Length: 296
Image 1 (tube, helix red, strand yellow):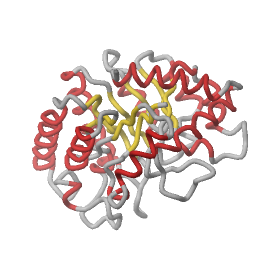
Image 2 (cartoon, rainbow, N blue to C red):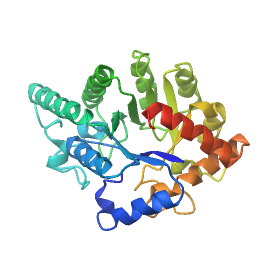
Image 3 (cartoon, rainbow, N blue to C red):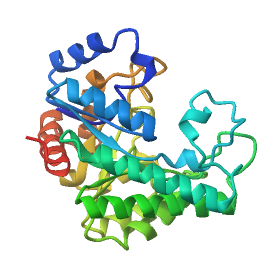
């Protein structure tokens, strides 16, 4: 198995990271991709990957960087993470910061362990009491397309973060689909996919787009909800599995710190919904992950 999307460099592993990594590979994993979310987090991802043969990295600016404010109550949105990309700064200052950040990402991306640009995209879910504004959405789209351009320049695939305000309507996914449609020469994976049937049909019509699923697909007790129907729609040959660890631990570990060692639970749920064996899912998703990330 390959965990195609985790955050092993996250501070939640600071006390036992090496033990967690050892347990991952003892559980049967071949590789883990640890995902960058800012310049500093990308730097940490690359450093961790360089220390371990079977860990690879991505670099990118998470769309929440373009929404967050300097007084955001969430601990991860500290000034060192935001780095001048927020609405407190005027447009020229933000653009200058974006250019500088992307230049730093480009430098990091030349490392041999970097295999994609990401996670980048659109975040319409508000982490505060205020909804995401139209100017914020526009600024997110700017950050998204600038980083897609970087991926195209470096001939790297893109890991897309797309979180809607309304899961049923899939608002952010429709906007993501419109953007990725303009870049048929770039490969995209829709990480932690939660789009509805309508937008899934749009994305399935784009051969340069694949889909990745995480532990949240195990939360439903039904087999006919939106996510289950969508999983049934998507060909196995266009799927990868992931954990998004330390977040979104699958059942029966929900509510605890996630780890790449649990990625098999995602494969089992997909197998159940598609009437396949877990081995079928593991074989197909591993093959696609190796192809997408150009892993040995």
